[in-house]
Image (tube, rainbow, N blue to C red; front, top):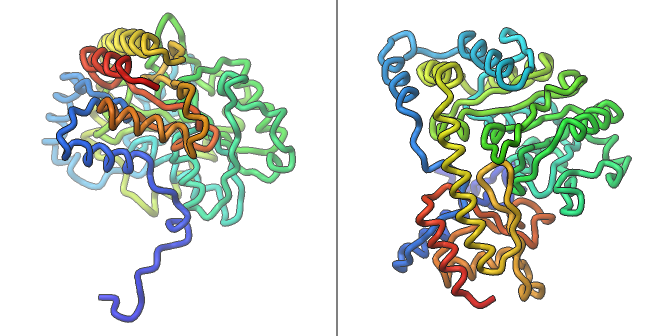
Length: 397
């Protein structure tokens, strides 16, 4: 009991903005209590089940007493070998399972630990804007300084390094990147990755490339690995996860691959903070990565049909929306008429919730350069997505 002194949170915690998705959950709950039939297209959490053969593998592995003990910090060698084989097979990237693969309790954990591994208090990190909030928030929690790197629409939602202040670039120690991109669904090619590598080498940056949507790809698009480009392994690592590819968000299993010295830094943080991923989940992960991949293609086909349904409905409502080649997100412009609002993206989001029972994510929640957009996901059934489009078509905005 703290009778004489009030609870005082650490500086890094005090500086954090409210976590976007927690705020959305509160907003949804208030609407549900009012009896609203909510269609939730806000959170990127697959609604499709984990494939049965992966669940079965976990069931058997969990019964093995050897898997009920503390796991290793870096992950089972067999799991890291499966990751390396998957990268070779799908991305034509060679990594050593011994020192160029690190098992993570989900890639979010690894991204956050990377900030602690490489940022001293007062150091600078380059954070794309708009972006997954963890990049910005992990930097703040490390008592470092996040510098927003705009992802302008006129540059295909990719950073224009020529526009970036050279002094800012030279001060920074790490650069976060993510393609296929959350929230914009933008994609990148090897020419862009080459420019990233040159920029990192010129400014002595560590590149932390986040790639969890690498297999959610449509219309014949193939998503390259950052590490497939010459020089990438000299400057960075790539994070990936089983969450989106195999519908395993709740399982908390991911990995990082690439530069051994960078991975060693994250491993040192993990050694002192966590005890590694549950081995039974790693064994199920081996089955996911090494087993039949038709479950992935089936998921992608479902998402592509959903994408088309949602795009058709939103376009019929008069919204400006592009059909993405990857992820399960739509990055949708706020329609005209909201320009005078303090936050057009929040105002439009509230209209959708209060007048149509639809929950989307306001773009400003991903950074100030996300203002003017909202993010829809298609992690919902085709029927509900069609209903969402029909409801929005009835609104006057």
